[in-house]
Length: 282
Image 1 (tube, helix red, strand yellow):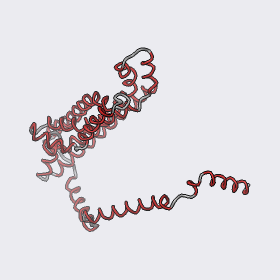
Image 2 (tube, helix red, strand yellow; image 1 turned 90 degrees about the horizontal axis):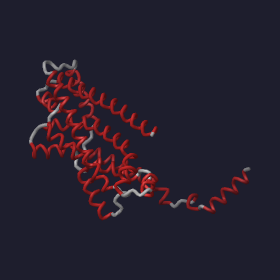
Image 3 (cartoon, one colour; image 1 turned 45 degrees about the vertical axis):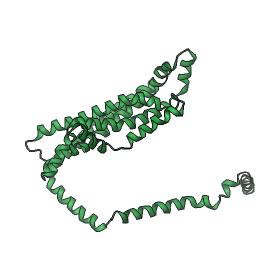
Image 4 (cartoon, rainbow, N blue to C red; image 1 turned 60 degrees about the horizontal axis):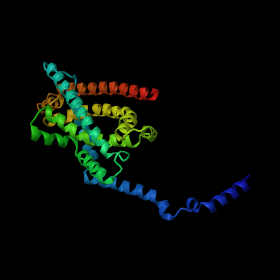
């Protein structure tokens, strides 16, 4: 048995020498990458002035803030906070919906199996990359200066930011769709629009719906952040209470945000699983 295994090993070694006798550069690639990553990490700690003493001092200060936040108390501002929370949810929902509606037709132009010519597809993809490369908070600051303070700026910020992300994700969903259905429609005499409407869309719509639901959950948090810079919603209330050092109200607002995000996560998760289950049945 040992001789047979040795013979087989020698035969495999002769047949595939690049597997058994790897060059030195190939053997050193992984250790070199790990060493470079460790060196970059240490350089980052030094460049950013990381200090264990400052960390410990910050943790003690954080503990003091937590004590000031207990117990959470909205005071007489509960109706105002509930209205602000509703405004934040509205910003997230409307911004996500607008982004999905406008990104869907543009994503068709960015999909390789729909627009084969790179001459037309390349500028669309780079446009989506440019829009997606700017963070939602930056878009909020831009739109606040364009349309003024308030939730409208927040809706536009989320819509523009998600437009780039949705365009990329939707186009990738179209590219990974099964070609058999498209070819069947083409064989039966359908044109290009029929191929998209009856061959591609039924396949990718459940995927797109799941992505939109996830982004709505994520945008609830984003709407809170952009509210701090003046886009309305619960974030504006949170920034105001932090400014006046009302820590009990701050903790209550944070709890409201956590509960809202958890509820949206649970609901969107149920909807995603329902969509996936329906797709499997179909």
